Image 1 (cartoon, rainbow, N blue to C red):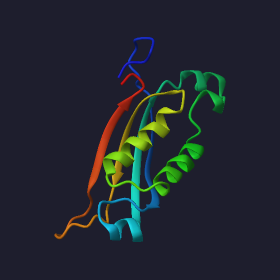
Image 2: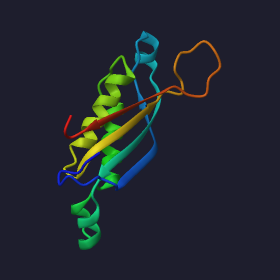
Image 3: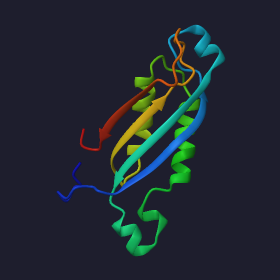
Length: 129
């Protein structure tokens, strides 16, 4: 990905394993009972200004971002993890410092009739999409 200056955005801020209970899914029992979702986000941003100034306002406050992501998973029900992932990407891109984001939504309790470890969807979105 390219930064607005034309330079590649090499800096990445990663938050892995954020857990939240959501009532998402196509089946009534999923929407009624809810289940745990696990979220990973990777943010592309330029951290040089924050490093030079040592000022939190020049970067992403990852604690506050985690709280907003948690609230986004816990809020309005959707049927598809694709819809949830898009919602989470929007939360990340609302941060002015973020150029792009990779969002992975894990649904470890998905209603699958055979043994499995995890099902997940990863999307990539950028401010320039």
